[in-house]
Length: 620
Image (tube, rainbow, N blue to C red; front, side):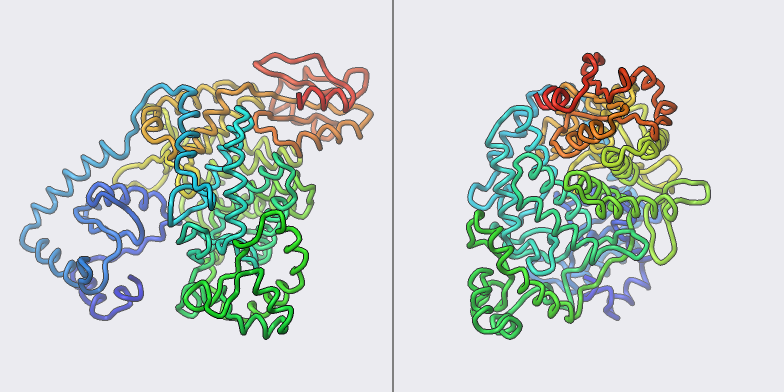
């Protein structure tokens, strides 16, 4: 639409004569996007982007749609015709349009922005598993047909379901999906990183746009799969995602950029595709031919006469061998590709998406014992806490070219608290837990709806819009409410402040019927619900004179897949934690020896000493 209409003189003239045109970056203003998308779905029965909405001066919509060509074609009304018709209606039947917008606004607020309350039960967890199993593609992995989205939180839900229920089908679905996504063209085998989604069932042809949040969430899924299965390839894929992000998507100050476009030189995918001749020219005839046979590069091509490198024809067991065999060749191809015209990089820094990448890197740092990942996570956090706050120390949502703007949204707070919790679990630095508690408290103050018992998308200090929207649907990203509720549960178990747990249960009830009506739309929220229904272990390690024992205990906690365990560490350097959590003064290193306390249901076992005893108790 930008090329066809908004940069077109004729359309621009019509817009400027009859309308006030406002272009919204939906990533900077998710509140407006969510609000007016609800109107579009009510008016048309569907949504999508680009989102086109026409409002009264009171900001109330009376017309909405998605894509409109310049002129009518293929049964789609053209923008020229539409703008002409609506301008005439506004001139001649204005009161009717205003009345229509008032009725529509009242309806949308009632039907789309309020949730149906009701009790949840553990049956909903089995139901979502069954529904995912029904939509699972056993041949190519993933769920549903084309287009296919990675939706990593569906996979991390299944990993937790497997852990609790020992349902092997859940793990099988995760592994097949991760393997096929990696083998397909949705993964960039030359420069690394995942594209937004696949246009086909096989994961071969992506929409070539790369998003920071997809890569963060997929890195988390691969890391957790590695923890569960000890499959080295999952570790290597997570490392490749991080290599891409740290090389291509990181500013000199340590913040992470938002996205890379699909297009370069006006052609989608041009930067990423290859001909057989190009490969052979770079690698030589013999090596080139071998590379092409493995990576599906042919004369005919697999994408518009050219080729997207992929490993869909390779057996999973051979992938590690292929990785090693063609390592040097991929570097040479990357160097040649790097001289092409790059896709446009969206270099705005979003607090929420940086939070997700901090989560992934913090996890990568502790699970893979990789100090540079932890350092990158800490550097991004430092950037946010210095550059994405206003003079009153209020968190902001977006930074670009030295300017920070917009009061932070729920996602910014929820994802950043999650990031701080992961950094605490990776470093045991008390300041991270302290900051998580402070931001969580601020979030509840700014976003909590005491009437409906859930969280608004916008803070009470934000610009006043038509209505403060709420969101619980876990789409491409988990909803802020979903992440926030799991944070509440973890913080309750870390600190003993069970008022936070009560808030979480209030939120589950506030949207219970909504979840039961479509459980697969809430797989991150249901991860939180599964957490609330599973016995949680709180582990406190108190360092004694035998420091090596405490380090062994912490390493086991950090590297094992323990989604229902939270841990705290007390040492001479971290004693200040007792000021944040006063009850910790009761935990001592008995006889001067490192002592570990494992507590469940608010009751603690006798303190454990020695790594062997601790390992047995923790993993039994």
